[in-house]
Image (cartoon, rainbow over all chains, first blue to last red; front, side):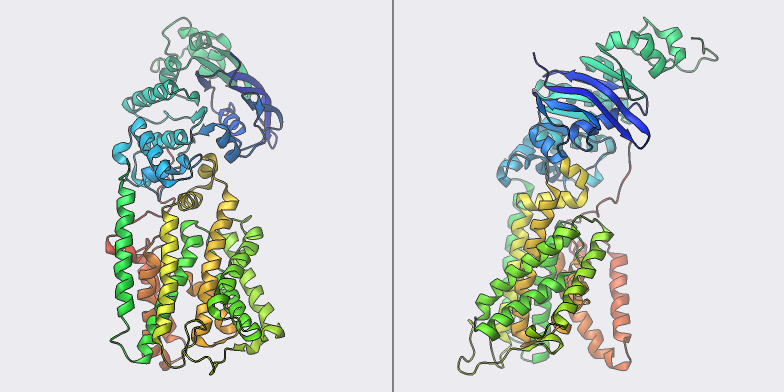
Length: 262
Length: 337
């Protein structure tokens, strides 16, 4: 199957800092792709290049073979790229329903149709009961859910989730995971940046690991976490000593003294 | 799925609007003193103007301080059409509105490239330029202004919007204008534009990610807002019968037009109306009771009252009426990063 989204040697620098260097990978139709890497690895920069917030310095992003890098965010959105933001950006003076209607209006021009689409999306994301609440007064978890609903209402082909599960309680994170699975089941391809490894790894089909702006490795999550390079770059040396071949959860157990062996 | 809280609320708004319109139509009938009737007309006029401003400044969040320009353009265009070409103002006001809208687009084209405070400052400058240009432009009367003569051969006429002594017809003209402005705002609230504009106001970055085109959205809001303001200017010119730059283009007017909306509730359907109903009589009262006592004391008190209201009710006076209060954008930026 030809890839839905192709990231082809994308490089982006901010001042002297190379955020992304020659990044290439494909996103297949219908998969959930995880994008992981330590802070500053260039994950959000890459998201911004894909969604049109910034234009890559070189390389290109293609959606179904069509070049989308260099297009503006609103154009990318119409072509089928939807995203959420790391720091939530809800329309705070509007209700939950109204927020989602803005997304629905991307392809629907009539209010009645946009409202119906928004209600349907709210039901899908489990926010129907909050339809008339001001976005401003939602809990952080609900706000992230709202961003997903709003993005879905645009009718995307690819949904980019930027740390949607970060900062949530374990219970909230689990229901977030379920939502992502449901989104994929709807036929929307998901690409997600996440820090919470325990929830990300069982969820994604493949993971792309970035470090210092470069692709370290791409593969199935269980392969990726066993890759010594990944362990060293992302998780630290200590885990490398103790965790290879261990449980799928790559987070080091609670502090045990010393242990900085290679 | 057809019946949502939004459709219910909108129907209710329409009913309240109709009731208010009826009430306001009857309001001046038992009042015969000219001073009070004039006060009511000006209040209604400002309710409409503030609503017109609200479309750009409230819903779309672009704090325009050049609305005197669109008001003045409307007043001058219809007046010049009347005095130079004999076009009745009921036709001329549409031309005034069109040019007011066009002027708003001309101002928006460069100014919408700026955002926030920079946009507001730029509009102040543009408004001032417009004032100075007309002040020094003899063909349109320069600093002397233009007198709108009462044409005896025509007599009192709705087509020509001239009534020698009666104030009542002007009340209905102002009311028609304010109602139209309200209705436009109501229609916008329920349309794609209204949603998109509010999204642009709350968070342009998020709006773009949802396929919203920011610049055209602002331009559309500016055009509608400017056009309505221009029509208001044309009606006002007929009412006062004389215009000059200091009565329809002066910089302070660009503050007075948004003020009722800001105080009543920015970006709300009722805010401009409530704000005008409180502010305009208040300014008249302070002026008539203490205006003569010394220069500016009335304005100080008026200003202090505005500050008090703004402090006590940052979301506007409408929040007192139990109208759904919208939190100001960005009031809770808890970044759960």
